Image (cartoon, rainbow, N blue to C red; front, side):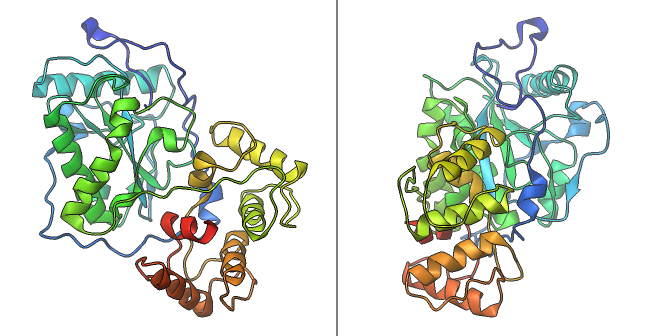
Length: 367
């Protein structure tokens, strides 16, 4: 959820749950330090034109408070949200326009954001509206993305899709779900995102979003998108590290924390200093603060690295490769030698051998 709209003429209702986005925090500076690279293009099995999108001009959006930030990079994941508004029975195009205006008004006037937070919204009637200005043009370009305000820690690397309604106990409408599949497939084709890189808001932040029922549909969503694009749709399942653990996986975790600015010894021992560094990172990225490196923490830390990158995240990759028997030099430089070793590791694990350490490759390295 990117911020609940007000109630214009009983259009929507606010729910008593915590708003996790008190500001448009992106952690973008920390992410760019990784030298992030997009994975190789997903290859559609017949193309995906995607659904029609009602753009900002058409639905009558207000101008942003200032120019939106258009990044000269592409996202590497999709994050699914629900609006946490009423599950209305008005499925019209007019309703879609009214909702888009209400959400922008709330997010600009109450949250103080520059514009709508998400990139796109899928209504219960199956209409798609553009959220933040320029999102549609960036998508059509396939080479740019607009910085959003929909998920702390992911706003410069993920496309945010709101789904109208509240899906804690109810299912989304079939028409809405079908359009969501089509929109996700379009985004994946345009940006080269693989189907397993479709997530829910709660995978990254401490929130109920996108609701238990819609979140439970995400494996099916990934499968349905993969049916059009090809590839394995299974999302990463992360191992857990906690105080008392030791070894090269802990060392890799410490490198990743140092990459994000933590002052922690890289010694392979998960002691009190590492636990405190994990807690600090969890607070900044709005995950559950428990000092345990688990699902949300790994999702926030696992930014892609590829040839040309340098830094502590590269050392984390090289450390794990060396621990797994690959002759990797731990020098923090992702050169041709490291790229070849990553590709060899990927091939041995039945992963696309593109040399890019994306979420699934990180997951296998840390298993």
